[in-house]
Image 1 (cartoon, rainbow, N blue to C red):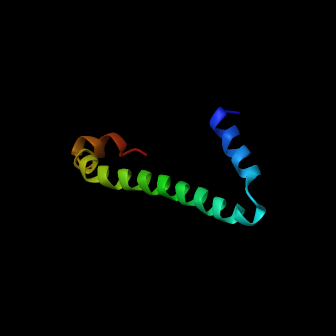
Image 2: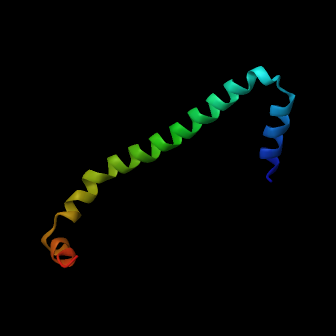
Length: 65
């Protein structure tokens, strides 16, 4: 376990149980932000990649699949 993870667990153990929901909400928020950033990056790169995907050479290369 990493030092930071150990610190997080230690801090969590010091919190009253009624605050656990807030911590869980924050963790879920962080995860959703990461997923959103990944999704935004993929969407932003699509127009740049599309010009290569739609080339006749690409169509030919994938035609037998």
